[in-house]
Length: 253
Image (cartoon, rainbow, N blue to C red; front, top):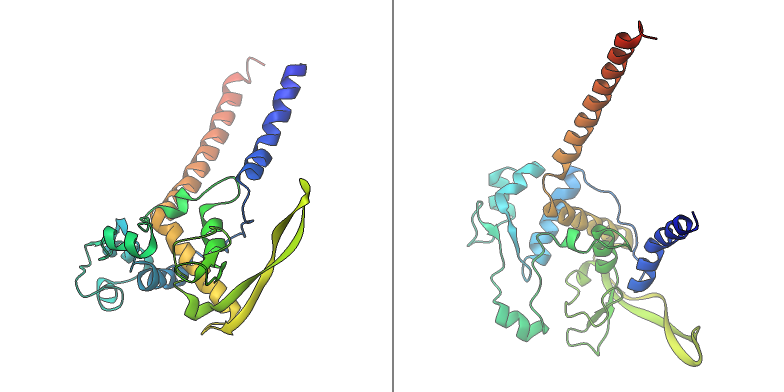
């Protein structure tokens, strides 16, 4: 009995231990924006700002028809001149050039929203926080840094929309070592405005993250609808089985 209680206590602590072990910048919850207009805007942002360096080699352009777009709309608004509607979402940047310019090859974003899921939050939470915490840092080769990924190689591709911000830090004593001082993040300071207000930028980022989440599993909407139908069917079947069982055994009782 004592062993069982100890085991339950350890299992209850596992999520907290995993979160503490991962550490890092706390993730914000990504807004739930999965309507078609948000996903369409997210697809446009992805192609205009992300696809220049990153690929999404598991996704075809024509799959955007699932978001309510016609092939003509995709062709006219979302394709580069050399791409085809049935082609994969790939970048023209060569890996050697990317490594020379950024120090690392940009990862494929096909399933990035699923790959970044952790005990700290969902992949959408990670991406939403990451994309909103860039700040100007002249010590970095690209001139930008990030709170979620310190010393990130990626520049802030949407800085014109968000504007230029600097991170503010305060000196405080290390709780684990009284003789040591640490830098604690206390907020951002807006240096110059962007073309969007903060609310507009947050909404655009949420749309982009929603698209990245959809791209990681385009059939997730159908899967959830099918799951609801299956649960309803099982509930009806369970009720009928229960009533049939009562009918069979009522004479015995």
